[in-house]
Length: 514
Image 1 (cartoon, rainbow, N blue to C red):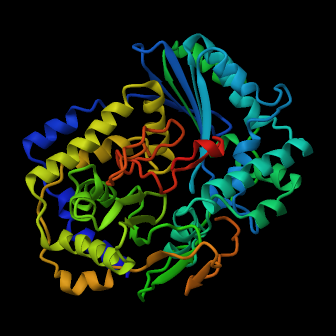
Image 2 (image 1 turned 180 degrees about the horizontal axis):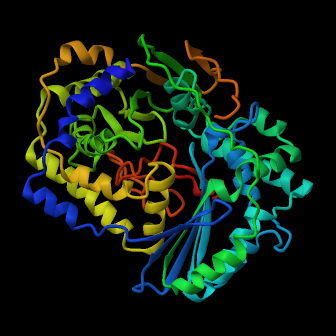
Image 3 (image 1 turned 90 degrees about the vertical axis):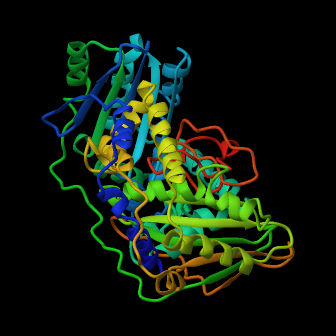
C-alpha cells in the first residue's frame, strides 16, 4: 500500500537529518538566497519585491490561494475555466488587452491552475511596470462577465479536455485516473481539467460567486521582481491595489484529511487508443512544508533524473520500457509520487509492474552511491540556479514557497536540506515493506481500437465536494527531452515528464506538454 512506500522513503529520511559534509554546505551556499522586501496592505494583500538591477525587465506575478481542490460542488474544472475568464474584460479593459499590454512591447503573459493555486504572471520591459500593476488590480477588483465570452471560453476548455486528455493515448491515465486512485476522500482526487458534464453545468452566476469568494486581496500574493525604484513601486501598489476592498466573509478552506490507506488496490483499464501497455504506481508524498519533501526530490532525481538514472538504466536501456519516469507532485497537503512505464513492444504490463517494483525495492536494499547522490544534488542545484537567473524565475520560486510551502524562506531552506543529504540508508527490510508498497498501481493495457473502453475495479469518479503542473523535467525515456515550459513551474525536480500533467495553463490545445 502507498503508505508503506513512504516508509521506504522514510528509511532514507536520515538523508535530510544528518549533517552536511563541507562540500555539500558549499554547494548550498553556491545558490544565492532570495533577497526580498515584504509588506502587507491594510486589505490583506501580501506584497513582495525582489530587486534585480542586472535585468532590463520586470516580472509581475499574482498568485491566488485557490486551485482545483476548491472547485465548487458539481463544478470540477471550474478553477481552470475561471482562469481563462480573467483574460477577458474588466470595467476598464477590453477582451485580450493583457496580450496587447505585454506582447506588443516585447513581453509575455500567461497563467496556470494547479490543485492549490492559480497564478498569473507577466514579464515586460521595466518602464511598463505601472500599467502591469494597474491591469492586475483591474482583474482582481473589477472583472466583467459577458455571456458570449463565458460560453466561448467554456468551449475552449472543453476542447482542451478532449485534445489533451480524451484523445491522447495516455491522457486519461495521467490526468484522470492518477488523481482518482491516489485519494479516497480528499478533493485532490478530482481532475483539475474537469469533465464535459460539469463544465456544461457551470453558469455565469458561478463565475461571479467564485470571483467574489476567492479573488480578493487577502487571498493573494503579489510579487514584483526586476528593475524598479522601491518608492515608486510602493506608490503604484498603494494607488492600484489598496482601494480594493477586503470582504467581510471568511475564505472557505478545505479541511478534510486523506485517511491512511489500509489495503492494497489494483486497477486494469483497457483503452481503445493505447498502442502499448502502461503501468503506473502511485504513492503518497509528504506536504511541501515537510522536511522530507526535499528528500523526495533527491530520491526522484536518483530514480529518473536523466539518462544515468536508475529507471533509464534498468528499464529503458534493457528494452523493458520505451519510457520510464516519475512524477513528484508536491502540494500543500499530502502529495502524490507516481512511478510509471510505457512498455516496449512485446513486453507485458506484468513485466513492467515487476520492473518498477524492483527499482522501488532497491531504495531499501541498494545504498545510494556518493556519485549518484552528487549527481542528483547537482541536478537540483543547477535547476535552482537557472531558475534564479531571471526576474520571472525568482518571482515564481518565492511565490510558490509562500503559497505551497507556507513560508517565503521555504525555497532556500529546501536547497539547504538537499545539500545536507548523505547516502545513509535504513536497515528496514524490503521483504516486509515493498510487497505492500505498490498500492495503488493503475495499469492501462491496449485494446483493439474497435473495442469499447473497459475498466476493472476502477473507482467511480468522485463527486465534487465543497471546498476541494515545475520546471519541466527531462523524461527518463528514449525520447528526446522537451524544452522547459514558461507556463508551469514546480519545485519537485529539474526535469519535466512529457506525460504527467503540469499545472493547467491557458495555452491552446496545440501547445500540449506532451
